Image (cartoon, rainbow, N blue to C red; front, side, top):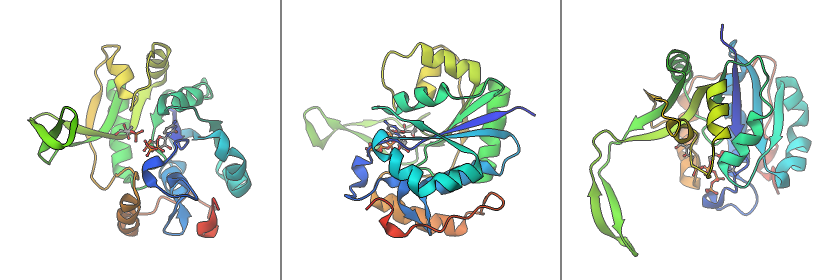
Length: 247
Ligand SMILES: Nc1ccn([C@@H]2O[C@H](COP(=O)(O)OP(=O)(O)OP(=O)(O)O)[C@@H](O)[C@H]2O)c(=O)n1
Ligand SMILES: C[C@](O)(CO)[C@H](O)COP(=O)(O)O
């Protein structure tokens, strides 16, 4: 069975979440922190041999204080993030064990990923070497006019357009090669592999696999987790430390 490592980037500034007290990976979602839901989608899997969560320097102490015991029980490693998402991923890649075959990178802010989607994107990565979850664009897309952000400049043809999600899954050597060639901060990891000229498979995800960016997304996620089958790891439960996690 191929061995997978999972990297959970949770070191962003959550600026669009607009909460003065805590960042979105640590928000209360149905009684547990968002990042815990995201981690639990992988902790029960027999093919996942390593899980690394990436937190910012400013969050590290509080995170360790609140979750240190549980991280130890779950065997989740903690890595320090960087200024950009790609910096955070690069730091975590350096901690991936040598016997790992594939690396799955999954936003800690995506807590509602169904197990079957993880199965499908993992299988696609095994087949193609690189695969991501994504959803076909269903809406009509408009690009704002230059210098006039609230006026339509053009309608963008949505044919063939997909909205990328995570997990984004790559053969370990491939993602390491892509990051070694990195020259800029990019918003997802597949772009780096695309730049190598390596095809990346698109696996249809779900709008329910949403990324929590704003408070409205958290409200939607609260409804989704009610219907999402639990993937709780054995012998682990972490009562949410109230909504004062980061107060
Ligand atoms: N330097 C960064 C930036 C982002 N992330 C993580 O990457 C995921 C997706 O990023 P995004 O949704 O943009 O999170 P933020 O950067 O925190 O959001 P914002 O742009 O609103 O500040 C999140 O889990 C975030 O914590 C990270 O680990 N390190
Ligand atoms: C990786 C990602 O979730 C795919 O859509 C997205 O690019 C993350 O972007 P963000 O600006 O860091 O949220």
